[in-house]
Image (tube, rainbow, N blue to C red; front, side, top):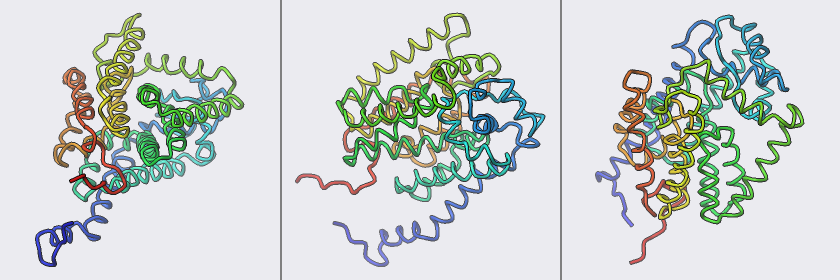
Length: 370
């Protein structure tokens, strides 16, 4: 065991990382995210994707998948809103019902606070240093997430907490949290396969029970056919937006066969992920599955790059994490194909973690055998 003597380099280094710098790093992070969410915005926050969540939560019935009903509600709040359709499983709209009953700006403020709190919780549980917190604050996909009022931080928190619970011997609870992430099946599709391949049946059972409960809860309010309406809404939404996809699916040209090709790509990615993660710890394997969702998933946008943050902070220097985020941002430029071609490097980065080199656990590192 190493003891830091007062005045030694180790003690001085720890002092610089103490209670003064950590709150300062957190304050800077909150200021950057708040600037993206509130100050760098058009009138009445018209670019905010939270309009889709808010409208679905306010309607809280089958109309959440009706573009006309959603748009009418949104434009009653902000006439400049365009093409903000709800394209998530119905349970997410119902879960946000309390926010839907509030005025939009009040609900938006609470939504920002929830996502910012989720970010800080992920960084805190991982025991990130101030330099890493600042890197997270400047990580471009996360800034985009706050600028568009997406929910990646909340899902990342559920994922990170679920993975840790599984690693700490509470697989049923961990699986239940991982099931919450399936509201984005285009990103998290490989996670259940990784759990099943490792025969973690209790975790898989927790996922199955929670998923079933979410389906039934949504069916009671929206109708038993809501998954069909959800898929239809998601596919129709592709016709009204020009997504800046960061994974390999962005290289597939739009055509009558593009959906089939994207599904085949996702299936191939799932098989590769199962092969590449066999020697990883359960924690690292699940983070690799998440990276695979971005690389091979049918639709991964720039703000979904936030899901790579724990892996990048664990495998790269803080400055390199910032650079990686800026590189991902090139997807909104003519250099987009370069980002898509380079996307397998994210999975390689995650899959290169082996055994104790994997995503760090929240608990102390066990001593090595002599």
